[in-house]
Image (cartoon, rainbow, N blue to C red; front, side, top):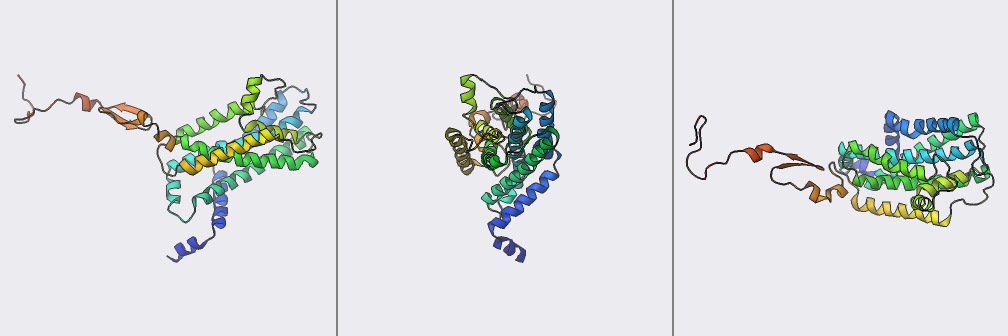
Length: 312
């Protein structure tokens, strides 16, 4: 009883910091999370530097451009992909439901998750930049490094909020990783994270800049350009990032799932999962139950048929 009273007397900020430490511990114990957040972007940086042409990009050496682009990719992995997979796993294992019965407020759990994603992003970007400086001759533009940090911070917040909102449409653990990568990789390609497109089609450019990946990635890339002297993110790009963040906050506030089972958005598709005679309901799957359809009809009155009786 004394322990419970002591736990409830802890300030929420301390509970949130404890959640950050706990989530970082889980990441270190998860080979997949560590690989996606740090190792995968580092391997991609090395591969792109080796196979990509050596021609300059916007007047910069290729390595000078691809290094901040891979940092943006780190943010996507740590704050979007890892958040979706880990949150859905925690929900389906009943961890989030149990947390609702503890003194930890819901917002403190989300703050702890975002703090863990932030620390992971800082470590991953540090590894990427250090590797590029030591092995590829990349120079850090110190007078614009504050812009790089500001754009990265916006990306961390926006990508985390969108990742948490996407969990409302992920029905089960097995679909979390395909949904995360299936939505992230196409946006990364059209947003110039992997390759620089000098003159993309107008419709493709407009489509990319309707999502927050392109503004964040471009601002981080421009921050490694020595010619950058002011905040590199345009006002329309900033409004896109803020708009997606606000929309994600609304979705989280209204529909964030704490209990196992189909996510709220999936449960809204009632016509897909409504039970029907002769069918068995599971999330998104309708299975036949032939024993209900093939069972012989019983007589309305009279004695029940006995085994061995032959009907005339």
